Image (cartoon, rainbow, N blue to C red; front, side, top):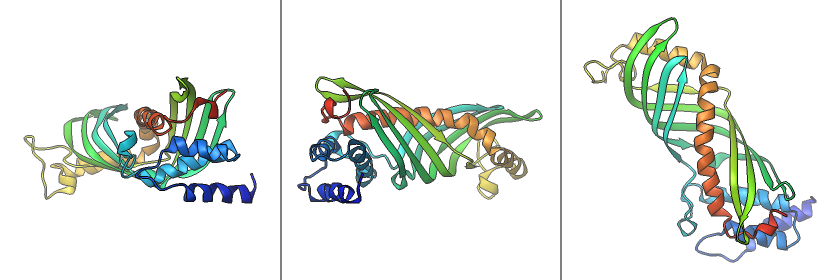
Length: 255
């Protein structure tokens, strides 16, 4: 891929007719029809998602991707059951695309990207025990967590629907080194928080101990957490790609 061809691709996208919305599928075909490299065109299609990640594209049924909304992430950490509810994840617009490769024969599209930082807000429910055998009872309230340097790997399996492309499967893997978690209203008293205490907990000492345990042991927490969040986000991304490139003729991406 030469510098001149990269410049041509960039100018082609900039000079395309201005519409009320951009159709990524049509742009992808236009790029390839101008005898540009397929992988470069596919990568540019992904880069162009950034422009509408916050607003979505109502004309194509594309929802916003920044934030991504997840209704439920539930998992176990030791004997501690954690549920994150109505979670909004921010930071996807800042993605850095590292690789994008389409294999027409194998009907796959492999994508690797990183997220410098993600932040999340939502609600939580937490109950169970932590070592050695500390019963935490039931707590619920607002939650926040953040993670730096998230690596993401997506494998799209491609097929067809009529003459157009169809993403039949999307396998997403997120690699988080660590996360920082804050839970408000741990250990309520008579079902109520204590607003003047640490993170509104009615037992500040125990709340700090539990959060220190979770955040200090972040790698093990993440080990249980990341498969669940990968699965939930993967479903959303599959739907997103299917809507985004629905108008792409299958012959452009598969044999």
